[in-house]
Length: 379
Image (cartoon, rainbow, N blue to C red):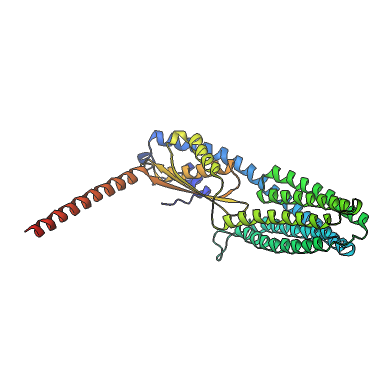
């Protein structure tokens, strides 16, 4: 039995019962007292939920803004580095430029996810568009593997056939400026991501810090190659940056693949949900049977099975289910969809007893049939 709670309907039914409904006959004083406590808790949780929801939407707006800046900035840095690498013949500058362009692609995926994640479900996508972000991230990660392979090949060719770098001072200035700009923007993004607890933005911030670090490696590679005469260092720096690209693409491939196959990687959240229910609804004798969680990218979904005594009125079960849902939402705003599925403890016990009885009957029947066949064979 799946109960879909409607707030307006529940408030009207709980506050203004109709005259033709035998309310006093079906509700005990303890049941009314429990309903009042749940309703009061519901109002408090609804206020907390409204505040959390406002903070979440504020974070989405701030995340979109910084993601747009990230796309434009990284794309501009990448183009400048690629042009500089082409004119100077520097492999590491070209590799770092390609890395910046691939990071701009990741930032664009984050922006796409922030835009599409809260698009309402329709006839084609009943559960919404959340996994579009994960699918796009999977495609981008595959593209990054291809880009990293090309960089390794070009770096290897440059290592075998080293050549002199033209205008090394210009190349180092470009790499130093790219590093400073990337790191500054990355720390801004991480600040917003931590403030509003946006997982996709945290990932993008870590990737941007990696991009700034790669530019630092490129700077020192050019410095060693031109000032100390170790020309092969330019090619070695390109290989190191390719290794950075492979590491980021591996993380993106792993994370997006696990999300697409509905794998859950945070068991602590399950314990947290059980703890919230046990603490907030200790007087209602709610037993949590099972908590099923799935991730859709930047938001999560939960299906919570609870066990009740079985003699509560339907209105109380609806109010209790809504109260549990809102209490969890207030503490864990990343859970966008929460389904509370109540089960009757007495029904479960009756089914369990019936199953055991049928099993015993089947065993006795098999034993009788075995003895009968053996006796026939003996005769």
